[in-house]
Image (cartoon, rainbow, N blue to C red; front, side):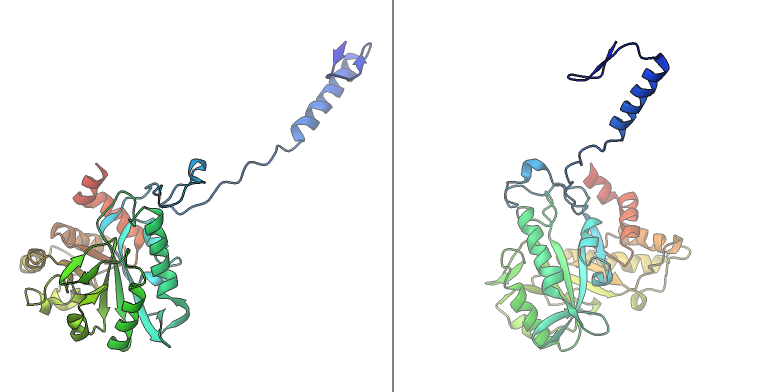
Amino acid sequence: MFTLGEGSAVMSGMPLRTLLAFVTAVLGLALATPAAPAAPVATASATRVVSAASADETPTRRPLALTVQPLERAHAHNDYEHPRPLLDALDRGFTSVEADVWIVGGELYLGHDGPDLTRTLRDYYLEPLAQRFRQNGGAIYPRWRPDFRLLIDVKGDATTTWAAIEKQLAAYPQLFTAYRGGKVHERAVTAVISGNRDLASMQAATTRFSFYDGRIGDLGGPLPASLVPLISDNWTKLFTWQGIGPMPEAERARLRQIVATAHANGQDVRFWATPDLPGPARDALWRELVAADVDAINTDDLAGLQRFLLAEDPQEAQNRD
């Protein structure tokens, strides 16, 4: 006798071969029946973890989980050209991004050779940064307090573009570092104006939400860090070495003197036009920048710089510990 289950018929006298065939068929049908679909899994950026426990909590009360290490020297050059502007850089731990802007009809549009009228600075940078700031309880990366840099490279007219930038930044007073009453009030993001800059207007402003990107000519000069927190310049105009063979000692000494002078004045240092093709030359030059304590390493290769800094920068090894 064999019972299939409660309420099933009892079979007796059935030939063994027939009984085995019947049981096999029933089991096969049961295994073929699809299981109930699993509950949908929430997707998130590489920099956040979503848990069921946090579903009913407001973002300002529960910071996003840190799943990427912030890289203090990582600067995303022409960040807006990546498939996911800003977000790709954040997913790689970058702490500095650069966006070229044009003013058209009072609005700020992204673009290098001209404005892309489908993409604005507000939609691709200001609003996403503000959202992340709220979600992380007042930081761009959770449990990481150093400021995040938004470098805004002005194309076109300096004066009207800067006025429009200031108006938009002022809408986020809790997010952006401000100069007010002769003092710098630090916040999670510091906006720095590069490209076409209106120095006179920025100097005259008693309140502003952006700062001036200086050049080597400003190094050690009268402009204070409260106006010029960053010194940037074209690598090829200052150095001949491109990473092939040893760096000339005179150029190494000059690089370190530039950094030391800037740091003594409370300023950071960045170079553009450094080699950016993967290979030994780029790695060699990046090693010299790290050894000299350059603050922002310029790249379009986000994954490449992330790998390099995690492997080669002692500062990042210390941060991991």
